[in-house]
Length: 102
Image (cartoon, rainbow, N blue to C red):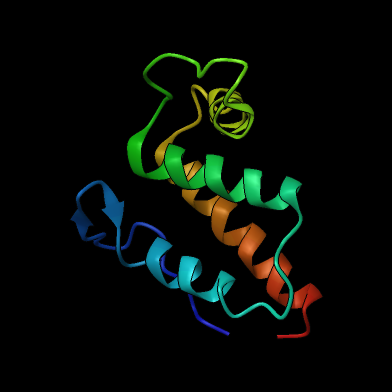
């Protein structure tokens, strides 16, 4: 299992904290099964909040169901710090890895 370091001299490149989020994101791809839609939305929203901050832009139309679900999940995190979102993302990845036996 990867040891994640949150905000210990983070290297910020294009809005991404490479020291912690990138390894966690890569670890999600090692799961034996694809995470549930609920978990994927959680990961998406927290990743966006950690890398970009509060949601921006307009809410997608009702015809874009997936885009709207992603936007809404991210919007629910408005006001949460990027550090907190990063920590929650990493905690969820660790929980998914543990549930997968890794």
